[in-house]
Length: 309
Ligand SMILES: [Fe+2]
Image 1 (cartoon, rainbow, N blue to C red):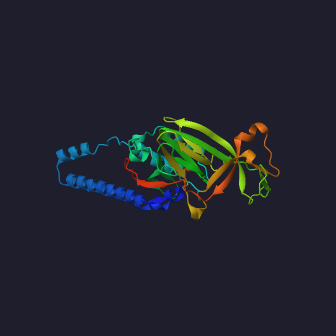
Image 2 (spheres, rainbow, N blue to C red):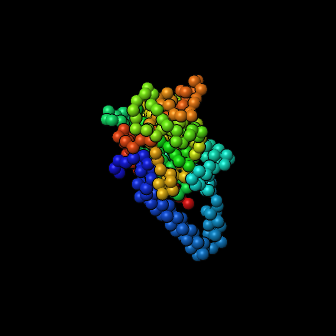
Image 3 (spheres, rainbow, N blue to C red):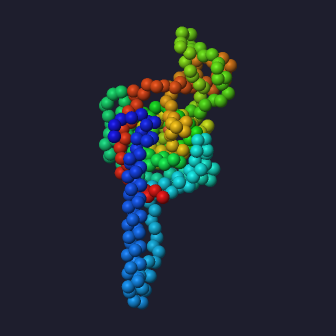
């Protein structure tokens, strides 16, 4: 798979992988049906003794559900009513958080020894690898693999609820939410005074600005709070399991937008004041098009199989 933007990498570029998972699922069902037929035939042609043996063989056995299968099953339930701006209720959120909190790297086939996590000296920035697990209409699951100093630039998740589980390593997360009471057409002046081409900036409030080291609890962001715009910077090699509900979708208005962030003191906007002590907790975000510092490679998910149902 070639290189692509973060938005593309999370989207349709991986549809073939999704099909592969489905094919495995169908094959599994076929095997299951074959076994069922075989038992029926045996039972029909045997006497009492064999029937007793057959009954014994058909005694229900405990079904072991893998952690990643449990994660898929839980997502399917939690995001059953998923749509733009629809947040699952608190019980569902906690249910999924509890499952993710227990997920270990080996549960999704990830180890720090994988080549994606090696220190890189490439320019302009280390390559990020995205392991696509699956995507359906309601949610998507995947793993971001960051080598040391790898950066996923500041980006948004429009109308989405996102669970991020750090599997191993140390990462710095900075996140923002929009401040909603800024006049939409207020004039903008750059400080110190400069002639600028009316930069379109929007005020945001810092929500998270912290280092996280695994094992740690799952981070959750929502359409309008919890730090909907976030940036990840790898301190050490690290892996982040992301669950998005609903997934990015351009036709549905859920486009991934990237931003630059500027200190509050860089711009003056008519009608916008922030108390002195709050200024360092606010920033101006500006949409960016140039993503030369972001290289995301796709790679197949090689962890335990998930049977989609
Ligand atoms: Fe994200």
